[in-house]
Image (tube, rainbow, N blue to C red; front, top):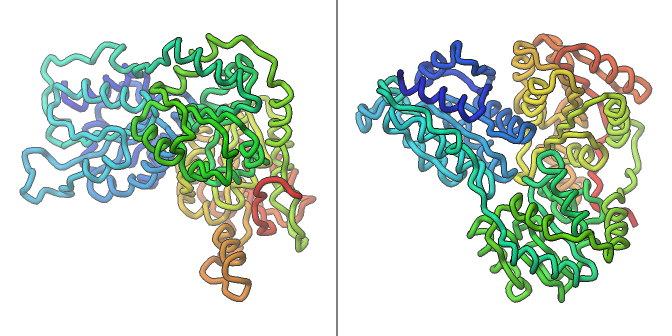
Length: 534
């Protein structure tokens, strides 16, 4: 058995049945090991796309997402999405090909020291050194990725190691692949519960790992157990997240803020007193020491206590000590109303507006028995997050990076072929990985892409308009590209929409096509809503 065979066997033991990958010389032994092993390879058109697909896979399944790329430029192309996965708290295992250990320092083909490149973006980055230890390396990496604050990990695979005989090495026992728990002590859970009960307007803020798709039942039970608003935040717009309505007003009123795995960072205005009640008390529950230190640095004396625990385990402990108190019922109702508030659309030129696109897609979602919503992009993506809801949702997240949405949709289409999958993005976003339309058609991933085509990089356009004026707009224009024709040419279905009266029928045809479909909608380029209208 080669190192490559032990690697694949270990992945299978961890429950992995699909790898998103772009081929290359150094990883051919792993491809060969997958042959007949029950591990599917979804072969992409760009290395970054493979990482984005693995990220969505992990979020939608609750397991590990695996991407594999080759060495050299292949590994380098994967770096951007590692940052996205880190910020979205997503457990992704990146496997990269690597030049042989035996040729180190000799100038081997695509020789590159990969670990220092990926280490700042991952929870663990290592270079395999022994075929016999390949199973242990995989188990260690997956455990690191899924434990504490989840995130990406990386294993570089030297060619001579994956080709090497692993001898009689065995796959580690199943328990070695399971995340380490970081429990909240019962006494601490009771202390936090008492603080919540004593507060007048408490809130619990969660990070992306606690969002509704990944842990919705857990946050709902926590809210019910302590009669407290529980809010998951996963937008770089933070206190101006359009999908959270008047979140800024909520937090200005809160007298107790419990951060359950939520960073005290720019998304919370660094905890600045201008954004919160000056007398508000803060409690921080964080598995990551650096994040507890950050909370201390930004909050100073307002931070009453910190606790070292995994937010998922902490939530379970807090639920256990909850008594379903009803003292905060009116406050919860008030918070829900504030979070549901949306700004009215701005004046329009006559084109279809982003909120009209969202309303039409919501009608399709409501008709579907099962639906997955993907949102990506700057301005249009924020409209989508504010205006649409579905049973499962993946967004481009706290990193602020765009371009993964088309890839997220492909992973969702593979995972849920009978569901209605809608991936909405701006025309700027669509350009990053448009070639993956061919991948989706080739691998049979049916889903619908809706492009809000305002013919510009609208987020930057709005910044220029606001900060520099209408006479200093530069470098943000795009054409009215026929992305729908590209989809059709690459084996999918295309629709081009310029009139609102055409939109519902076009979405219906796309959804029923049974193919990857692109609905290219010419829209008014409006600024996204930012909090409630006044």
